Each structure stands twice: as structure tokens, then as C-alpha cells.
Image 1 (cartoon, rainbow, N blue to C red):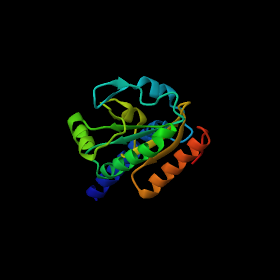
Image 2 (image 1 turned 90 degrees about the horizontal axis):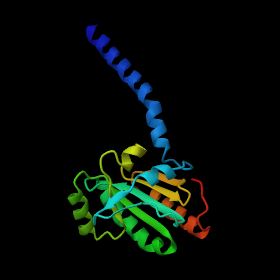
Image 3 (image 1 turned 135 degrees about the vertical axis):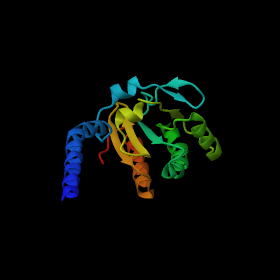
Image 4 (image 1 turned 90 degrees about the vertical axis):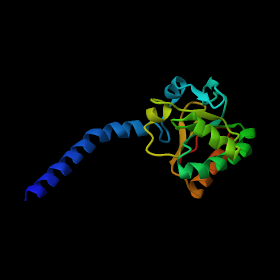
Amino acid sequence: MHRNRLVGVAVALVAIALVAVGPIATVSVAKATPGAQLPDLLETHNLTTLEGRTGRIVPAAAPASVIHFWASWCAPCKKELPLLDDLDAELGPRGVRFAAISIDSDPAKARRFVEQQEIHLPVFLDGPEGLAESLALPSIPSTFVVDRQGRVTFATTGSSEEELARLRAHLVGLVQSKGAVASH
């Protein structure tokens, strides 16, 4: 009887915590959902590249910018980043800008992975209290497409061939419509 009561109290405490934190998490994650405006957030987060340069991750002139969060310890990320590099080679010349943002705590690990995989797209390092934390990402890999107004037009977490195909189709649509927002 005593044990059942303890379990009941524990379940109640977890439920209260989820209710209390739920609205905060929802607001944070909503920052990176399609239709959300991110110009202030993107303007305030200058990140450092693997080469040590600091700069904006989203160029103002790009019709679409792909922002991809990854880590060298993440198995799906290791598979997806080279595929995004191929997409950058295909669509970069058509105006789409890519930024791969590593959340690795050790920049050397990110650098080593990028060198081993011969990744050519721009790679940035995100530190503590960085952009990933500001967006309260639910998981990695996470990929967002942002238009030139700072509006999220596409968002996905995880890695699958279907999501990569959706991303490519979305980007091709943006390029063909010269940066108009497509809804997904």
C-alpha cells in the first residue's frame, strides 16, 4: 500500500512538472516552425566557422537559407551531412545558402568529421547558450529553411530519405518561384 502511494505521488509530480514546463517548451520550439519569424534571433547570433571567422549564418540576399544542426556523435547526422553537402553543390549555385551548425562541445571533433567526410558547405560552431539552445531544438539533426525575411518556410527533425526529398523539393520550389514562401 505504501509503495503504491509513493508511485502515485511520483506520477503526480511528473505530471505537474510537465504541465508547468510544457507551455515554455512549446513557445520555444514554435520559434522554428514554418511561418515563424526569426530575424531578431538570427541577427543576434553570429557564429564562428571551423576556420575561426565569425559571421552571420543567413545572408540577407539569399532567397533561401538552409540551417542544419548536427553533431559528430550523432549517427543520423553523420549520414545526413554528406547528403546536404551534395544538395549544397547542386542548389548553392542557384542562390540557396547552406549552414551546418555543429553543437559539438569539442570543435576538434566537428573539424575532424568535416575533414574526413570532405564536407564543403559552411560549418559553424554553436557554443553554450547558442542558437540551438535559443531555438530549444527537440532533437538533432534538425533542419530549417529560412527565407530572406527571416521566416521559417520548412522545418524537420531527424533524418530520412523522405525528409531529404521533401527538403530538396521545397528548395527547388523556392528557387523556381524566386524566393516565394511555400507552405508545408
